[in-house]
Image (cartoon, rainbow, N blue to C red; front, top):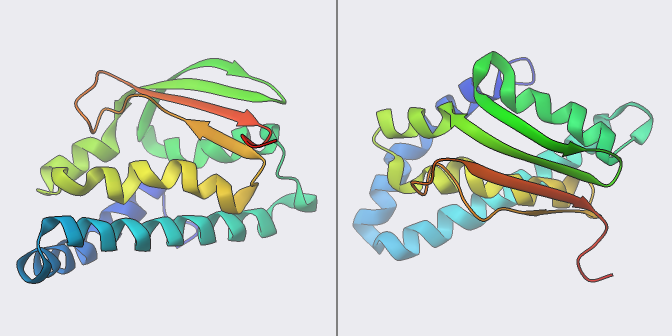
Length: 158
């Protein structure tokens, strides 16, 4: 799946997850189903981050390397962004259009779009480079006009 654009990869994953989600909700209720799906997808995102770090040329997982890697999520116009800062320590940008959110709405998965994509953003970097942290106050999936991404080099706790 490495050569598949990320938007298409998420669509294929969502097609598989949708019936699983429906069964989980029917049997366990929405709260428990969300918790299960959230944990599973976060675990997968951390592992994907580790795999991308291992494949990074020369093992470079610096902020500039991460910024270059982030272009993968924008392929094919999947995200329209406005970059605010991009340097060795910070990567701040806003997403002004998110085709991931649009796709999940079209698929009837708006209720879990945040789990399917948004929650991956911060947990991916845990596997890619645990010294990169992310903060985001708003997302389009939550009904805001933009997503606010703020990545920092350096652990929150140190």
